[in-house]
Amino acid sequence: MKVLLLGATGLTGGMVLENLLAMDEVSQVVAPTRRALTIEHYKLKPAAVDFAHLEDQSDLFAVDVIICCLGTTIKKAGSRRRFREVDYGYAIKAAEIGRQQGAWAFILMSAVGASPSSPVFYNRIKGELEHDLKGLGYPCLSIYQPGLLLGERSEHRKAEALGIKAMPAINALLHGPLRQYRGIEAATVACAMANEALKLSENREAMAGVHYRRYEDMVALANSR
Image (cartoon, rainbow, N blue to C red; front, side, top):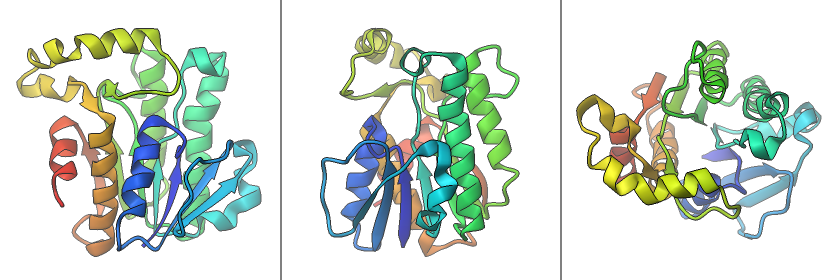
């Protein structure tokens, strides 16, 4: 199986990369990034790209599965326009090129509460991306909707840090339908994504269609190997 991973320098993406490289079934991981990766591996094909012109390196997208962990924050992006360009524009362009190059499965890191009609800008952009991905004709599309991602980031996000500290107490209160809003370890999500990519390659027909992965689904997938 040949996989292209977007967002390999991020918290979850970096962990997805480690999982994929450890799988015997994965022959190559293509990792387009803006800044150089710190990891080297015989299966890894790093590629410096300009995300605004992904079409210039469309040959990179000739893979079986694409996993997208691209994402930023409005603060880091500098504006809502720039945030949308990264979280929506880069991801949808990559998906379009991948489909044109023959990729048959796309696994997306989205967010709980994502909806094109959400009054929350962040969730609305994520929802628009989910909606438009479904129109590209991928035989297999998995959309991950985690709550707050727990893990040690390279950059400090004050609001997230406060949320992470409070999450154990909050998680204990979230039961039934509210479980999908629980904070979840980025390592769990990463393991689930890598495991799902493997399951997709093993049985495309059974995994066909659009699937939404929420808290319990991600935990189950992470423990499925």
